Amino acid sequence: MKAIQIEGFGNPADVVKVVDLPDVDAPGIGEVVIALEASPINPSDLLMISGRYGYLPKLPSVVGQEGVGRITAVGNGVTHLKIGDRTIVPYPAPVWAERIKADARWLRRLPDGDVDQLAMLGINPPTAYLLLTDFVKLPMGSWVIQNAANSGVGRSVIPIAKSLGLNTVSVVRRDDVVDEIKALGGDVVLVDGPDLAKRVASATGDALISLALDGVGDMSTMNLLGCLADKARLVAYSAMSGKPFVGDARLLIYREMTLHGFWLGHWFKRTTPQDYVQMYERLAPLVVSGAIRTPVAQTFTFDQASEAVKAAARYQGKILFKTA
Ligand SMILES: NC(=O)c1ccc[n+]([C@@H]2O[C@H](COP(=O)([O-])OP(=O)(O)OC[C@H]3O[C@@H](n4cnc5c(N)ncnc54)[C@H](OP(=O)(O)O)[C@@H]3O)[C@@H](O)[C@H]2O)c1
Figure 1: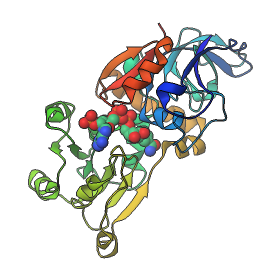
Figure 2: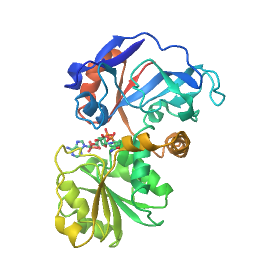
Figure 3: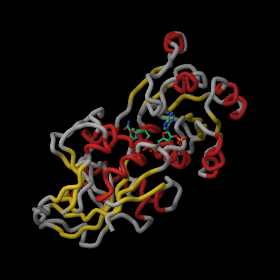
Figure 4: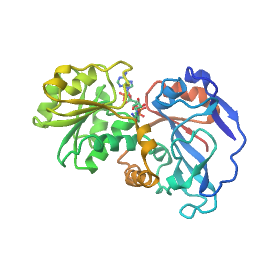
């Protein structure tokens, strides 16, 4: 079967190789085999392939971290799934292979929906959900602020916040996506800049904001901090700017704000099959209904791996591998 493998870390376009691997064995007790249908190339895949991620596989390794497929074989003892069901591929199975064997305890049949959108259910929606719920319990009607609002994570934050009764300030880096993010349900959508705090106060009626989600770093972190209430939390989950974040220690000292980091990898390590399944049962309907929607810029086959990762590194919309 075809798969995308790396033998060394480096520039993704140079190191991804299409290989022909032996097919997976028949599933054992409690296992299923999934034929991959679609999988995105996320920024974290590019980080991992270039050797700069929080977890690095032992090489050589098939790469790719999330996707969906149809079940093609079911092992003994699996009664809740059948051949033909669509499921996500459970983390941390490397995904960019035509078939993947997985532990069925982590899987449920997905509802029918757009396969490309379901392929992006595995990582960004749970990240958004946990960013909104793990650090502070916000009463309904509270405001949350986020930057990188046009990213997959940012687009998930908006409908999930809405489902929790929260209002969002979404900060983007360019004017041309403001209307689109408003159409997704963003309550206030603003372009980043040094005067952000003033514009946020005016648009929210001086709302007290206790949670900021930072996917950008650099001066954008400082701009978010400027919008926050005393004792607020800022959670950094990414640094798309590629630069260290800028902050003012006086906000932490005199106004008791706190900075946190978040990585879904830690949740994957500590979660149980029951909580894992429950998370996706909560989020899949939001993807199927179109409430969580990430535009797909282009799709590629495994044979176009190098071209595909090059396109993904331009960060101009999601790039997906499709197998059929
Ligand atoms: N910590 C975690 O557990 C976790 C989980 C999921 C994702 N992440 C991280 O979150 C980030 C977003 O992931 P994603 O899949 O949501 O991304 P995505 O959908 O591929 O979108 C990338 C986003 O980055 C923005 N961007 C690109 N370069 C930028 C720059 N120089 N300054 C500011 N913004 C920039 C783009 O802005 P435009 O829309 O304006 O083009 C776009 O919105 C990635 O770094 C990813 O690794 C972390």
